[in-house]
Image 1 (cartoon, rainbow, N blue to C red):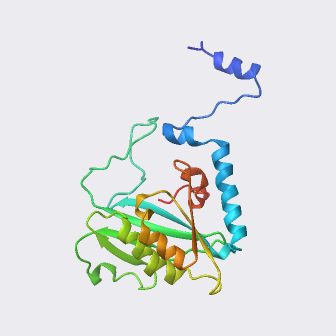
Image 2: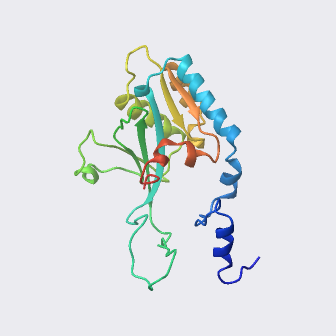
Image 3: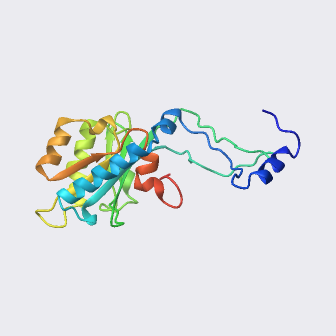
Length: 220
């Protein structure tokens, strides 16, 4: 329907309960997944696990992955024609990618990041500017997390920097449904080390995942 000039203003004047907002494009699957019953089900399960295992806020951790193209800013200011909207910053498609795995707790604490580079070998000189306890670096052929790297992250990184509040305490780890976590060895390590797993429902991480709800938006 095409409104005549000023028709929009008259329509809003007649309907003060309505307002005009800028609509952002959203993936269809994500839009359809935002059912209240699915969100409530997740929080009910969260409360159930937290209560059953008497888990403290310091022992509740959320992992967030972010891919970054080397030498390419995710956002940046550019010169363009005055009045132009939705200016794109086009990637050349030929850059290598690095995966950043960050973690934060329900108590507001964070641990050093875990980086995954696309490489066959790792040189010490790459990290001369970083203190040994400020970050963990790993490599693989793709630059993305996979099952063996996820297990390494769990065994060597998470367990080192986020030990339980007491030796007998359980921890709760909130994760997305990435295939790198769908592995028997990953589950077995969590089971033997009293780490309870809770996965976010598909297509709802942008709503439920804590790092996506910070004042400045998503990581990166």
